[in-house]
Length: 220
Image (cartoon, rainbow, N blue to C red; front, side, top):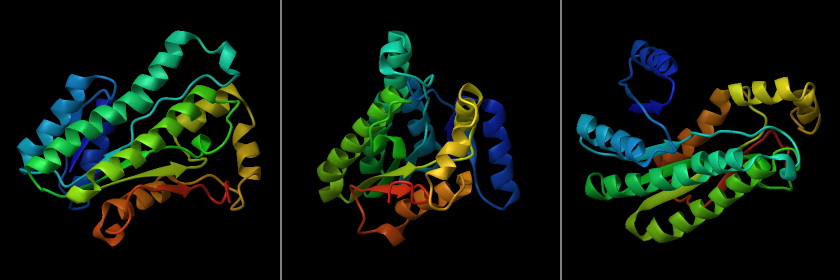
């Protein structure tokens, strides 16, 4: 597999972890908001492995919590560049590569449980992710006849740097979110990754156009 992200130290660490476990992995630095960077990452995958079968578009950026009228326009633009335009760029490149090599395949985008409701704390982030749900569904309908499946996952509270940053800006928010979650806790990132892996696998061969909640029951 090819790993792509902005932070090279983390890329190297995960790549080495995969190799140590007996897997095959390479990495390339990539900025989801940069069209040339996204295309280069997909091209590098085909160059290394000769084909593209599956892709997981997991890049995201959040916003400073607060009402929509207090969000600077520049920050709004960045949220949409990464969370909506980024997956659009990626899917376009990935679909072209799947068509040219494997012929059929699967794509998973990372949405958010925050896209499924009004989101006064993260309004621009939630709206971008809701738009991504629509883009995912449109891609599923468009490319399904070619054998290309497109789905999204909608994680709830997950123990990532993004949630740590939200907790730092809004102390106690994780406890509040956990109180709204029937399972009573945040997810480990691996739990979310397992859902994405299932959607990318042949075990989900008849699943496309769905937004799979991985939220501990928060939106049940």
